[in-house]
Length: 82
Image 1: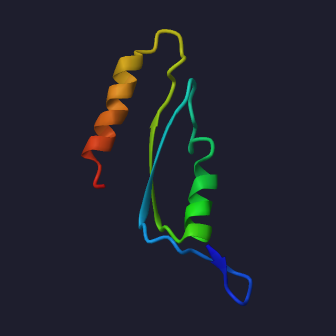
Image 2: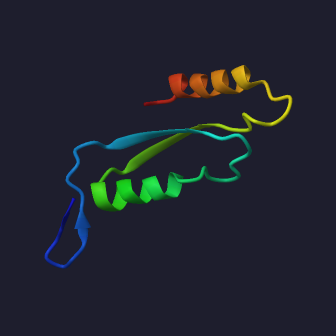
């Protein structure tokens, strides 16, 4: 990125999307930890407008079917309009 004469960051990246993939031992809630940070960096500093988020959560919950959770996340990625 560079700053405009007015001091506004201007992205120089030619990409139009980022694919953000993350995991968690517990639930994420509405947004995964760190997602908003990456989204803001991509939008404001790099000029990348689209950030796709994929997650596998609750991996450390007792009794969780970890393989099923991971496979579900992989399927979401594979079937996404990327």
